[in-house]
Length: 315
Length: 114
Image (tube, rainbow over the protein chains, first blue to last red):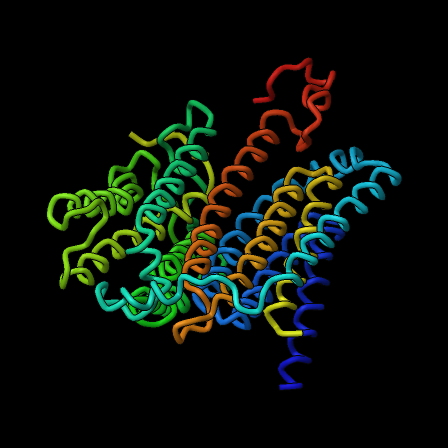
């Protein structure tokens, strides 16, 4: 017990220290690398809160995919750093800002300390109806069944973000491919890593999705791992990003929300309520929806990271 | 002090740190990073709401957990869009700053670099 407590305190200090590093580090590149470490440490904190599903998501998306996005951007923006840093507020205003932020943090800390030991909970309701969904993992049940509408709209947000990113392309590149072209002779180390890691990672991603019905895991986490595998292969330049005008790509992007919405409407017709699942048949429907969500996530995340098209479309 | 309370205090500190970075750093990319840091602090505070809602044989209330998972994904989508905007700004102006006076330097006569 004492050992665990010591570990908790050590972890808390470590998370805080790395977080401070990402804010105060001199170079943006160092800060973004710090952010990846921070995300991994944070997922350990989530495990200590018994939220393994959140820990998996934080590690895969919060740390991994966001990390790739930020590191890539920091590398490209390196030349503009010095000029931007000149606009840093003066010492006095920085002090004023810091005191404001300490106040906010203290107020929040006071709220945290005032929380009752046993807060309000929806866990009993979630567990009570769990058998009807055929699932064993209550978090997946909340995501795909109880709060299905939320999760569907979140998929729509992902698609909208892709539309927004693609819209930033110069006119002549519209419909073309983002990212780097396939290399004739890929960098051997990266290519080796991609060839070894990708097959295993795809297996792990599909497994995490599949066990998500009953154990920690699910569509988000599995999809994010599959997305990471595709990104590794693209970064090794063994393959290149598809043209954004490709029909299969656009179909894959909208498949998740479309199937989800269709299932919701189907529920309104056959099961007596929008997003209601037919009794006794809920689990197959949920797995069907999740499979398409995995596809959409696995395609959306790499498209968001590679950014707007940068090459002219081939006819 | 329980590990949940400790995690909540870390969350509060992260919100403070992130807020400071958001206001006090000048580079847009580092503002995005700070905003993400602040967001993860908020998620962590919400996470202890989940932990304190442990009931019905569960170690944590699944509803806040699911909302945090949704939140992490949406935060990523927003960050990706923000990063794309900054990179486009950099391509157009050669600057990555939020100060509009710096965007068109006299050297390029306000013309867009090709």
